[in-house]
Length: 186
Image 1 (tube, rainbow, N blue to C red):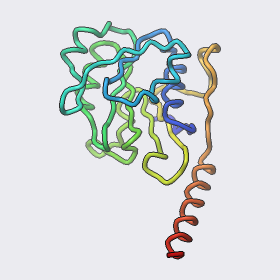
Image 2 (image 1 turned 135 degrees about the horizontal axis):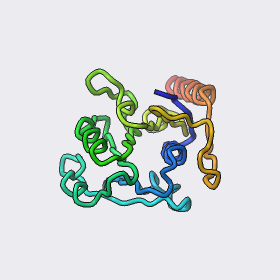
Image 3 (image 1 turned 180 degrees about the vertical axis):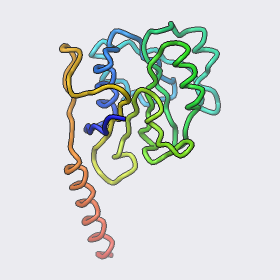
Image 4 (image 1 turned 90 degrees about the vertical axis):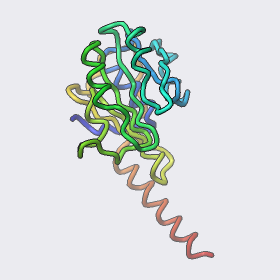
C-alpha cells in the first residue's frame, strides 16, 4: 500500500482520497452512525453523501445497501468501530460486486488487525486518526492501495493541511515530558 500520507485530521485524509480517486461527482455511502465532523469537509466541495443504516452489531445493513446502491457509482465507507474490524470480507465482496471503492475508517483502531493484516489495507484506502489514541493535538494518516496522492486529479478541490512525522514525534515527546513532570509534581 501507498503511504501513510500524513494529515492534520482524518477527515482531510478522507477528502483527499476521494479527490485523488476522482470520486467528487460520485456518491459516498456513509454509515448513519458516524460523527458529522467526518463528512463536514466534503459538503462544501460538492461531494454527494448518502447515509446507510447499520445493524445493531454496527455492521452495514447489506439489504438496504443492495436496494439503494447504484452500481459503479462511488465508494462505501466502512467504519471499524471502537477498535474492532467490521465485516471486512463482506464489504470487499459487496464493493467488488457493485463496482464501488472501499474506504476503511480506522480512526479509532489504527493498531487493529484482521487475519494478521492491518485494517485499512484491505480496501482501496484507509485512514487513521492518531490523535484519538495518542496524547497529541492532531495527526492522521492515509494509506492508499493502487493510487498515488502526490498529483491532484481535480484542480477545483483544495489541498488539505498535511503534516509530517517529525511534528507527530515532537507532539508525543512534549506530551511525555509534560506528563512525566506533572506525575512527579504530586
